Length: 287
Image (cartoon, rainbow, N blue to C red):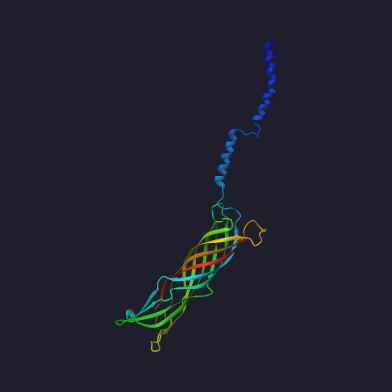
């Protein structure tokens, strides 16, 4: 009995120590190995499923550009056949690469990129020409059974405007912003002011001129370039709101033609597909 009493006293003395140890083990300040791994797994899963493609702090933008544009005519040997093949007029072009000025306004919204993911800007661009392309050449006429004869000098102008839905992909490396841009839309291209003059004083009088005609076509464009981002007021914001860019753009304007020479000569002059190679300098402000 004496031994049993001693054992009971010892057990009673150990109970506070066991209770304290049990309390320390369940303390949230020292998580178990299982709870640590579970937290890491949960965090990894959270990042994998909720990591956004773009940051939430995008920006509206508005900008303008000035361009030098070189027109390219795919077909430089136009022909018109009259009277069921009795008479053929050929228009070999002598000035098939001509330059003009283009200005554009663009605006939209840019979704800010993350890391190596580019910022993506979606918007509209409006393009117009303060000057015009000029083309010229000589008209060579061939009557059935006769040798070709060079009868007239000809010249005309081309103007074009377009409205484009655009996307621009921009990467940022410190202040430098290389980019790729693409666009699709509608082009209003107008060949006009066609005129012919006789090569010599005894030449045949020219026919009525081909009439002006506005061609509405599907247009597309693609380009590359590099920009420089900055702030006019360096202390205003960490985000760089201003960009100056230098770029190149290829533009396809579709098939273009004049209307006929009138009701007596309802024959059209088809110039074929035209395109342009543009180099531009642009300024953009992000709000």
